[in-house]
Image 1: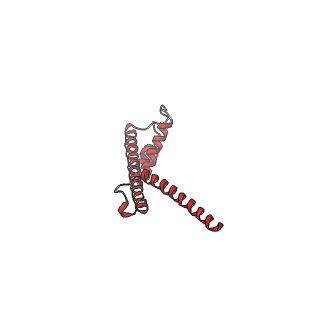
Image 2: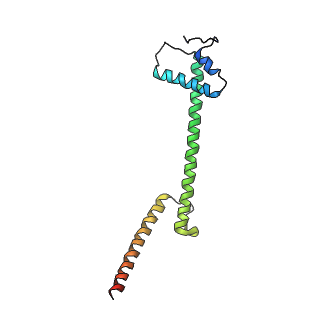
Image 3: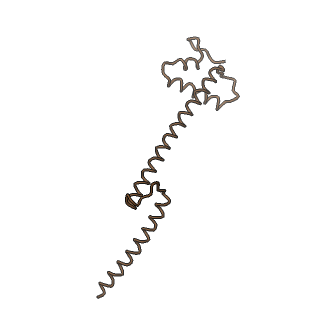
Length: 134
């Protein structure tokens, strides 16, 4: 049985009745930690409603965290699409850019451009040598 505080309430009730939601979260986290660590313990027990409230809190907390993660990933995806489009326009011009370019397309084109540039550099160097030798 839970130890009764001077107010006549259990420790869990004291924490739940605290004026700020932070305490409720801390209480639920404490219950969760306790039951995760000591699933078969009987030294300290919480009422069934405490456990149910903890389950509801944990579920809501996890759902909020997942929603935030999804929002963050959607923001990253939008950034990736925007930057891909900007890179495509920079490489091909507005008229030559694809309506929806992929990074794979841009990487292939960048490799082709690099090969062309290397070829032009070799030609330039060969012409310089030819001019310098005269």
